[in-house]
Amino acid sequence: MSSNDRVIIFDTTLRDGEQSPGASMTKEEKLRIAKALERMRVDVIEAGFAIASPGDFEAVKAIADTIKDSTVCSLSRAVDGDIDRAAEALAGANSGRIHTFLATSPIHMQYKLRMQPDQVVEQAVKAVKRARNLCADVEFSCEDAGRSEIDFLCRIIEAAIDAGARTINIPDTVGYAIPHQYAETIRQLLNRVPNADKAVFSVHCHNDLGLAVANSLAAVVAGARQVECTINGLGERAGNAALEEIVMAIKTRADLLNVYTNIDTPHILSTSRLVSGITGFPVQPNKAIVGANAFAHESGIHQDGVLKHRETYEIMSAQSVGWHTNKMVLGKHSGRNAFRTRLEELGIQLAGEAELNAAFARFKELADKKHEIFDEDLQALVSDTLADEAPEHFKLVYLEVASKTGEVPHATLVISVAGQEQSVGAEGSGPVDATFKAIESIANSEANLQLYSVNAITQGTDSQGEVTVRLEKGGRIVNGNGADTDILVASAKAYINALNLMQAGGSKAHPQVAGV
Ligand code: KIV
Ligand code: ZN
Image (cartoon, rainbow, N blue to C red):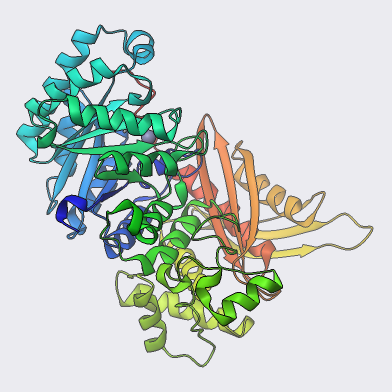
């Protein structure tokens, strides 16, 4: 296959993925994910929306300053301030891209932008030119292209390419497209836009009808050569096309699709787990590629077939996406070297010896409670260690919970608040409820609990429980995580982590809410 057959993988987990309610990430968490994406050889990492908040700006900048092998991109609306801020955040990048967008559908132009089509074209051209003066690599997106008129798309795309855009993105912003129709749109644009050969055509599909991956692949068949996607399909509303599904469909059906990607697929699973652990969005067991059951054969006939010849029931190998490479377990006799090596193999880079020592001490504590430490345990343990090392307003010092049949559960705990220890007791309808009430009687956060979820990280009753607590206050949503072999301790840690994130504050603009 020639280089024209390569599909550029543009990952937007850190931008569109973060727009999933509750999926906000800290700068450090985004940096860890960006490193995992670079290791997986993602071509373009959309690191955020630099103008959205000082935190977003810092995260885009840190990623741009650190990542060397992938292009780092920042989103910006088609306005001067956004474009300048994106360029500023990307200044240190080896290879940076400004991604500017403006809505092109009649409904968005009339009701959201309150602009005439001529004005929209003029603004798009102005934005692309300004971006090109600041950055050689500019992408222009026709927001809501899925509901835009084809003649208008041809007109604005030709103008954007003339103005210097080298990637033209055709987003199905509201997940409205159907594969054959979306493919036809791409085909027509490639045929009708006179300067189409000067740009890469990209697709960005949302999953409102469950068709994001199918639409993206249909567009690739029609000639699109960049797919925008997210790990685990995270994203606004029903999410975006899942990177792992796009990449493995292209790899597994190369015979039919005749294209390829540069993705190093054995890193898919660990990246999926990293994103799930950080965002607190669990992966459903029957999720393609990365779900716990994706390669599990239950029926006897299937098991028998796979044992005789794997391809009878498997279209790709589990190893090719990272399953079974994580069989190696560590235990309480494992040394620092084995621990460090395994972290490196998992793509987890700790900042220095102090962080490694803290994580190793936790590992030893965990190994005393649990015989075998799996990769999932290591990922949770590192997340926990890093969360603990960050400056924290609230810190769990001690927790005791009493729960007996026929009696009201009671939690006693000690929390350090800005360095001052406070103790309290509370009753609740269950042990978790009592624990959260006790924490709240100290914190008085007035936040609403939106989600409490517990996941066993590995198999067996000695597994660590990974808890996610989602809190909302004044429209701001945060996700706290905690892991421990004792799920009450994990629950308390997750609640306290959420309170600390809330305390850290900072609000941000949503790229698609505010008009231009
Ligand atoms: O869905 C969408 O239209 C977007 C654009 C900003 C590319 O996310
Ligand atoms: Zn989107």
